[in-house]
Length: 159
Length: 84
Image 1 (cartoon, rainbow over the protein chains, first blue to last red):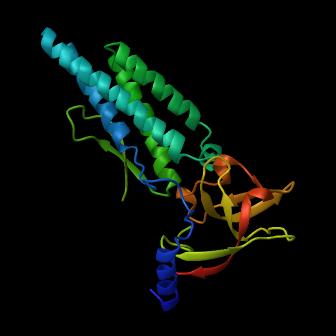
Image 2 (cartoon, each protein chain N blue to C red):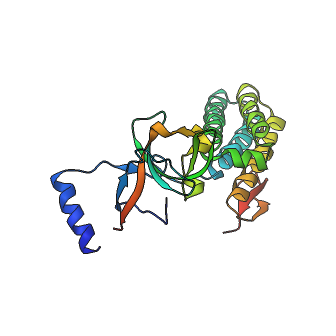
């Protein structure tokens, strides 16, 4: 810290300068599609487990968890779509709006029904969004079977 | 505006008065919709409106979100920059 900065810091304490913001509000730059992908996996898993039991109590708990994670998936997608993706991303990937819209609809369908196809389509759509996300950061991706009981193909960044 | 400007840096802007901002100028401007000042660079000028953009593009809230701004929102051009 130079002498001039020290002088200005002292003056700042005596008469605070106005703050000028050079970037967005907090948290700055921390976006990741992984939470949406994990939520989609959970929706698949809960849908599968519901189909494997007739115990009312278990079904109630599994349904509650499916509901919660489908909603979490929606929330994470909304954050990526509304806060991260910019006009230049949409210009380069014009399918982006449609993908997010389809994913939102699939989240709702997965909540309303015990529908494995909807749950699997949700993960597939979220994976496409994740692929676009990492491409906008110039990061290559790879697809691998997730280390969860769902064992579904998932898009991961090559970091 | 990293790496050009970092948190904790001091800047002194000078109002344009009778001059007009130019593309490439680093300016302090009022956010068109929120009660705060922003530090951005003028990327282009079209029809007397200024398209501003942050240097740290991936994380910048700028004209890509809120559109080009009028001169009346531009408080001044940065003439002094003291690094932290």
